[in-house]
Length: 268
Image (cartoon, rainbow, N blue to C red; front, side):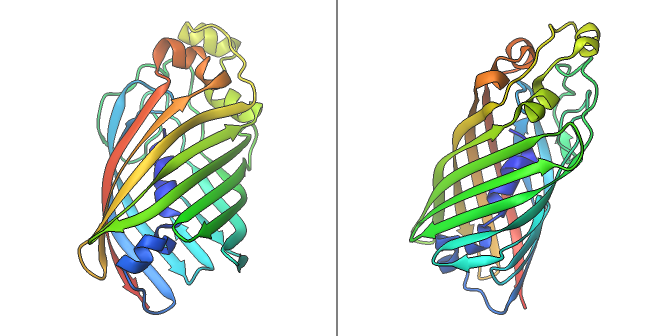
């Protein structure tokens, strides 16, 4: 799993989670969080090599209407009876042939699995999200389309349960993603030129489920304004993506993520 992909799931609703609403009572309308975190992830989605990255934990929120972070910018145009809907714009970082996908990498081997496949440029993605919160359960759907060819469409879904034990707050639940053939071919397909350069057989990836898995996060408030998060996830690649020679011969269907972050929040 890509670092930013997991971070996005952690950041999108972190200030509106039921448990955290109890942990950190918010004052004012604007909320600014500044901090940092470390995360251990596969070098790229499907890799068997792992990299350690240092990422910025910077978020801006206005009430429940606007959010912006390292993973994207969105507006909640509808917020009624537990439902939220709105547009979102994200940036998908490039996949480098020699260095994987994390722009914040600080340690780990340079991946050789992508050698001969060339770079995949970064791209802006635009789409929408829907989120439903009922008591301590929250489900979220995000659908985005790459603004340039050939990046394709990606849809993600997750459900999380939030609770607390004393001063500790936690969440856990399943998640999955689906992509069209254009998206899957960009990252897992192998054309004739790539086959010659890499030694991998030609392959065309179809639309379908990319991965499914489960994740958990432990939130530890240190004060009214300081929050730490400890998180991990497991994902299993499946379908046409898992059958790609990139995964079968040079990578792994099993993807693990662990990390932590700390942030200081100002309420204005």
